[in-house]
Length: 144
Image (cartoon, rainbow, N blue to C red; front, side, top):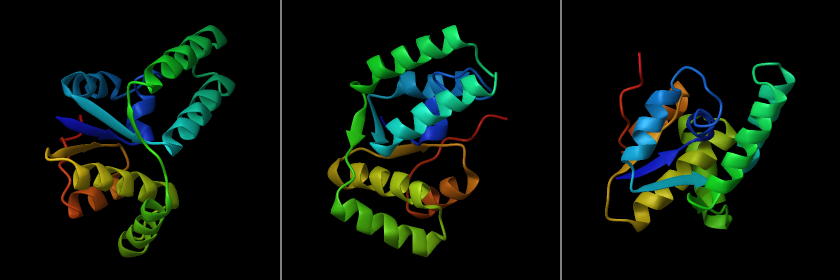
């Protein structure tokens, strides 16, 4: 199975919060995990916010960043180049999406376009999930 994770799902692997065990289940079931390159910056920003808000302690923060850096090379990272930008722009207009959400959706659709397997989209943003479903991506039911 090819799994595409937006940053909201990816961060749950490193910051223990509601939905983390569910994300781990899907990540472990995947043969390939894709993420847009912007997910790197988004995740690092989320980690910094978690430590500065006091949700995680500094020692935990250092470990989560180390784990993330080590894992990054295992992901199928989609570089953001001109065709992806243009597709994301069209998706943003069509689905009235935020910019980075459109980038994630365009990256997931790029994986689907170049592969023979179904792509499962994993995210925690309802508007982004709705657009992913409208574009024909498979979505697992969110945990209750």
